[in-house]
Length: 86
Image 1 (cartoon, rainbow, N blue to C red):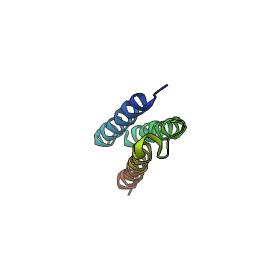
Image 2: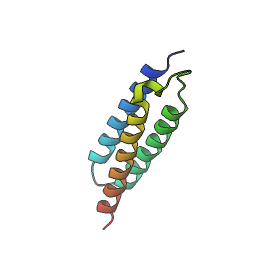
Image 3: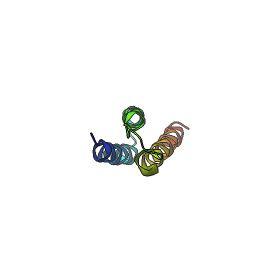
Image 4: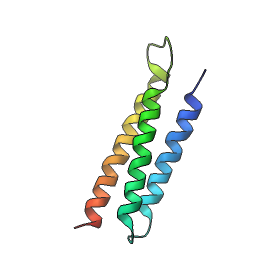
């Protein structure tokens, strides 16, 4: 079963959702940023759990890249939270 397309779409949707949350109105920023963080945690777990049996480089290295992008998004959300709460 090839889960790569599903994982790829999930990562894209999650990152877009996180970006939208970060770009939202400053009012209630913390709740939206918290929600974005929750989505990123789930996305990272799903990508990490995806299987590519017998592959030397799981999903051609793209799953690892997706996780790195998710971690970058997590770091950006942390910075946004700091900016919202000086």
